[in-house]
Image 1 (cartoon, rainbow, N blue to C red):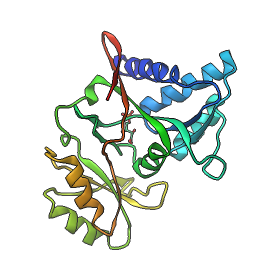
Image 2 (cartoon, rainbow, N blue to C red):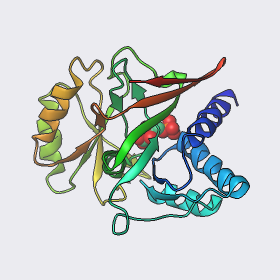
Image 3 (tube, rainbow, N blue to C red):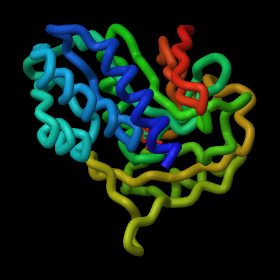
Image 4 (tube, helix red, strand yellow):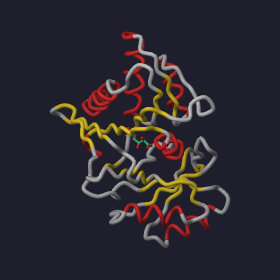
Length: 225
Ligand code: DER
């Protein structure tokens, strides 16, 4: 369908930013699927030598499927570029991420890179963050207390469920989806959430994205911060 075609188009465009010899952070989600696919094609057709670090078990599986060699932080401490999706992008390139429950590893892999490239279809571009419930990774221990503290910041958190049980992330934690509706000051909210001991990481990616590649019916647009 057309949304899938938009994801494929931005994935391919993003793959063109990867140069021979680069160490690449690989995000998570259905748009990143097309990035990994496109990188596999470039390795096959052009013989470029790259290595990736995946931000989820799922992305690692796609890398294996498409022939993208993997490295890890034991071997590689700095990445040249990280490419990832997002659930919302505001005009300042502040992000909400975590729709795929991979936000913790995604943020580590984003921080490890010289440059963060975000790939989205146009439906993710918003005037302000918050219509998408903010995913927050929380420790299972005392989760009810952590949710109680998050509530005080002005939302009704919902524990993300999977097959009738709380979803467990790759890191063994829970995800609370927090519908703030409209986040006036994303940086301030992130600070307040991080101050809660049971909060492991938030889906607010503040001042991290350098470039956003947007797919729409006219084609692909590259926007730099
Ligand atoms: O979970 C995540 O952070 C993903 O990157 C998500 O934000 C985008 O997933 P999508 O490309 O499947 O919409």
